[in-house]
Amino acid sequence: MHVLRDLGRRKLRSTLTIAGISIGIVALVVFGAMANEIDTFVNANADYLGTSVRVTPVGSGERLLLPLPPGTLAALQGMDGVAAVVPSVQVLVSDENSMPSGLLPDTIVGVDPAAAPVPGAYRTPLAQGRELVPSDAPANVAVLGSDVALRYGRRVGDRIELRGESFEVVGVYATTTAVPDSQIVVPMAAARRLFIASLPEQYREGAGTSELYTLITVYPAAGVTPDELAARIAASDSSLQTMTAASARAELGSITRLFSAILMGIALLSLLVGGLSIVNTMAMAVAERTREIGIKRAIGGTRARVVREVVTESAVVGMIGGLIGLAVGAVIVLIGNELGRATDTILFDLTPLTALEGLLFATVLGALAGLIPAVNAARLDPVAALRYE
Image (cartoon, rainbow, N blue to C red; front, side, top):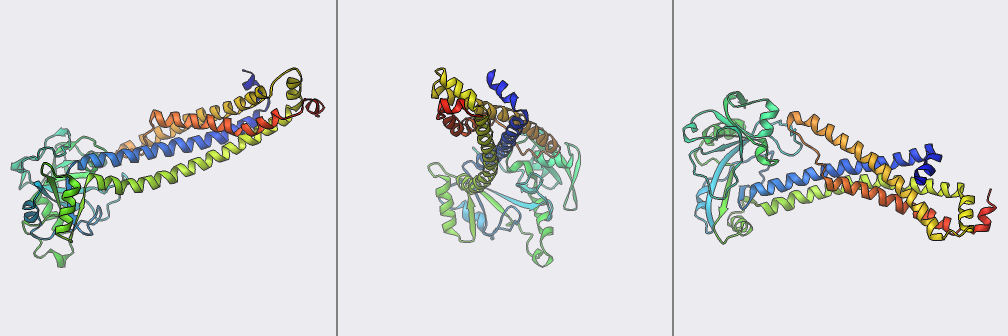
């Protein structure tokens, strides 16, 4: 209690110091929660890929979807080490599609409704409705990812317009925090038609063949790793590029690690400023209590006790600032996620570990910041301290 009493003697100075620490902890908590959500996204997409190998044309990406060369499907089916292949056609919902989730554009994915499920392949769980069935092959029907359904406000039985064509919604997938959330699954024939319509007019002629695919997912045979199979595919045709769970994790992980490092650097810089304010506050507190320290030393108080008292006081300042910063940061995370929930845009994931790390960091920083003033206080000569005015 005497620590709180000492802080109460310098209300304005203590308040400003605690505020400085709080701001740093708010930044640490908010940016840490954002980094957690990004890590969750990377891990979820790696799990989505599983043991498969995604094969696309060189130059194709999330926002530029190109057709595979004719004959690619047959070549992959006949390759050693391949257990199954699943072709698909992808086309962006809009060429000017903004990315509400900040990571992936909404994409139409054409599949063969009559194709048999591949053992071990990722199965997106349904939240409502049904999957596509063989009788859907010639129809305009769709199963929506959770982000898409929420963004467009569609449920089973509603209709959704995709690139000028109307589709009946027959199912909605559950949230996965991965690629399927931003996808709209339709029959292959409809996807081919939409893809061809999206091409510049001079490229449409001859594009409507049954060999038109933009992505082929390949599953390795027993005893063959995804990376080994990906290397074989890349070596067999230089016009193809591959992606596995490991390569996706490495590629996305390097980007997210850099982003997280920048965020945490900003937060730590804020905390450093707060730590310097504690050093200044405790140095002034020691100067104001020089006679008090001299009396304690004169009646037998040890230097260790003086150090302990000053460090404890500075640690309490850090802990109070940490608690306030944690509370404010949690409120910001909660409000941010609630505002984004309407579009299923969750940006933050505040875990107990992140909260505990923020509080411990503030407390330890406070203790360390008070160490120098504490040592200086312990070194005071008792006689000189008693004469201090």
